Length: 332
Image 1 (cartoon, rainbow, N blue to C red):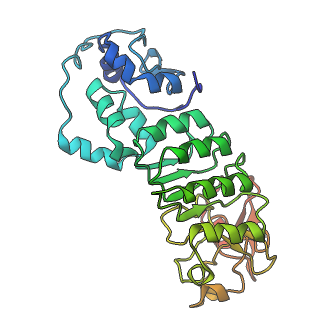
Image 2 (image 1 turned 90 degrees about the vertical axis):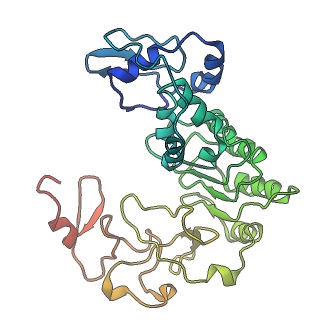
Image 3 (image 1 turned 135 degrees about the vertical axis):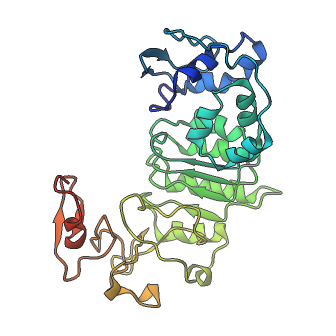
């Protein structure tokens, strides 16, 4: 199996378990669940209302506590069109859960490439996804993948990213912030090959916040590959504020690349705007406190700088301004 315990806390109930148990020993259905078998998405033993369940992706899964209604899902129908439409609003983790409800939903989720045009991986899946898992998930789009977002995925490598790019020519947005095994050289090489391929629009939006070793030379080559000149980079975009859960700039922003040169240290890093009213100016680039977090410390709660403001340090060594600290519970 490619990975163990890919998803941990998947919610379920007895009826769901009985539905899964009622799957017939059908070779076609088992074949459609091969990806699930290889991913071993639910390999942990969980306690569901007294029933000890070994999660698995094939008809061999055993439910140790049996009860009434075991055949409630034996007769399956094609999902209503409205249900298929609502699936487009689910994320990867939820889609992986829905496909295990019954054979018809399994087919709907796995065979509909429109559901996989955008793949966003973050917690809790980010620490478990590997190159092989990512390639299998991306293959469900049948080459129609347009946006790939991998937030802090430490097991994704340059080679794994290359394999995904080779099979998805419609990809235009690539977001890989905090992926520590990716290198700037590997990203540059992958983008050069991908953007030079015939019939490919190429990557137009790139997010590499948290990637180490980016030099000015790398940055200039990236701008050239993305088709972003200095005039476009200086356009007015919505400000990027620093706070817990919003450290990175994702693909919903229009700018071509997320990093820029820090006005203070002149290093290529993520730059944050200030939320303090006294620091607000019409021209965001003119903010005195607009800089990277190494140059300007900020409140992890509201994102403001600490200019003439008291702050506290919590148990996690995070800095919190006095205003936000007073609003925290007493046991924070």
